[in-house]
Length: 153
Image 1 (spheres, rainbow, N blue to C red):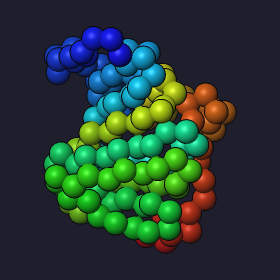
Image 2: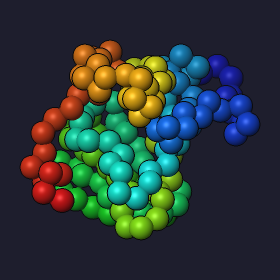
Image 3: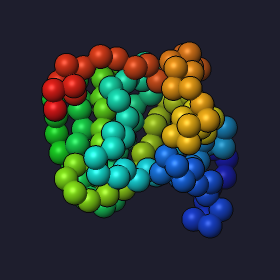
Image 4: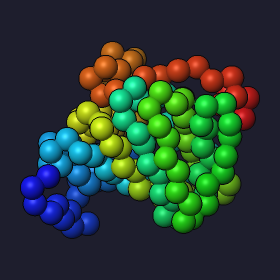
């Protein structure tokens, strides 16, 4: 990153079906980080259990409550809470309770991810087969895993 990056809210790409707002990706930050904001509706899973082999993922809860799996531990984060999930740690998340959760995410040492979120948008809209996501694990460093704890929640 050789110059500051400013993304105005009016200029950010919004993926409305998935509730993702793209902020800055690794090509714009010289590989330092990728960041997005997500809105999670109550009763809908945010992300199933997965891990990143290379990236750490930072969560900052802006509004609402977020149920998070880290390893085999379930935790509820509240507005203002911050979490860092290190590489190779299975995690999953969803809105907790009756209100919408809004979360700022930053992934460090990450691969470019915006195309992953665009692919995910196609899944949410019903234009893309969800099985396609599994074929992109290495490309986006997003590896889905099984979690009995998450299933039993």
